[in-house]
Amino acid sequence: MTHPATAQRIATFGTTIFTEMSALALAHNAVNLGQGFPDFVGPDFVKNAAVAAVQADLNQYAPMPGLPSLRQAIAATWADRTGREIDPLADVSISSGATEVLCNIMLAFVNPGDGVVMFEPAYDAYQPDVIMAGGHAIPVRLYPPDAQHSGWHYDDAALEAAFAQRPKLLLLNTPHNPTGKVFSASELQRIAELCQTYNVLAVVDEVYDRLVYDQHQHIHLASLPGMWERTMTVNSIGKTFSVTGWKIGWCVAPAKLISAVRATHQWVTFATSTPMQQASAVALNDARHNGYYDQLISEYSARRIQLNTILRATGLPLIDAEGSYFVSVDVAPLGVSDVRVFCRRLTSELGVASIPIPAFYLAPGAPALARFCFAKKATTLAAAGERLTRLHDIDWTS
Ligand code: GLN
Image 1: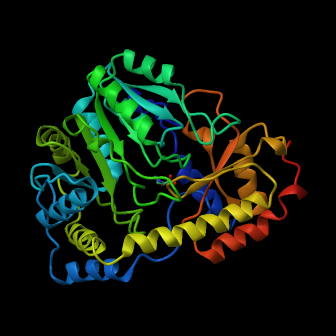
Image 2 (image 1 turned 180 degrees about the vertical axis):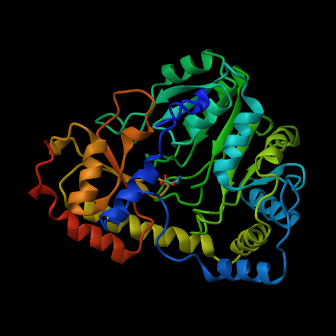
Image 3 (image 1 turned 90 degrees about the vertical axis):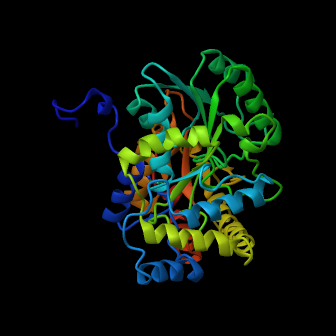
């Protein structure tokens, strides 16, 4: 679909799977459990803060690195989570969502020819970000749970082989989209050891860090010994406060890394929405004390159980989420040969949208999994459940 005059770097970009599946869902009036965004409203204390910020006339350009109030709120939250006091002005930079800062980081650190290690399936923006910087992805495969492994897992020798290629960066996502994997303490220890042995900088995308279930625990890679100095931690307001349209993101890292991130941010967006930054500062400050995070996890746990019950009723094998708001289902028993085709047909013929997990793999041989999002109202999940009772009335082999 590229025009002959376009740059070579966009030749493989196409259209994101989220755009494709949401458009299809809309066209077929389908229940959209595909693209990850809540269909319920964000909390009043957060929405009211946005209204107040606009009314207070915080409506002109923000400082390029971000509003000081937001950087302070992020630093305070970071200290709560990791015990480390950081400099809010030097060690934090604000961007238009995690999406922008991830791109800024690649543009700031990756030279043409550099490799970036990432686990696949990988969030769909990662490889394009690396390509835009002139680098290439070095994928390390995650495998679904099996008889020997209770969760998604990887081969340690493959991870070490990836580091042995002397990458510039490791790009890690935990809790992980699309698998719902939460990297364990021992996995993170090993990753930290490899980063130090091979002198690799780490970028950790933690946008789902507040959505972790049961016995699982989110550990910040930056909090492990020797890792603060070499880690850029990315987060954003969207998932945690159910306001994905706000697009306020940030990076926490030592000042010398942050100054490189700002060097690219200033030429990409320069500054990010002022009132939404102020509202995000209020959200983060209030949430430190008002019990919001506990309520969030209990509501998401209920949604996860509801969706799991619905999906289990189909008889298809389910892979539960350790974190994030995604679970997946193995559609191979339906005789499906192409999961993308299955997801399109599920949307158009049954009226339930999901996302094909193979869309997140960089190399062929992906498992036949479809991802379903449970950031949805109970009534939305129930409507999907009602439609899914007809799953076996359709021949999916054709
Ligand atoms: N992160 C969301 C998901 O995985 C979608 C974000 C987007 O639409 N780019 O579904």
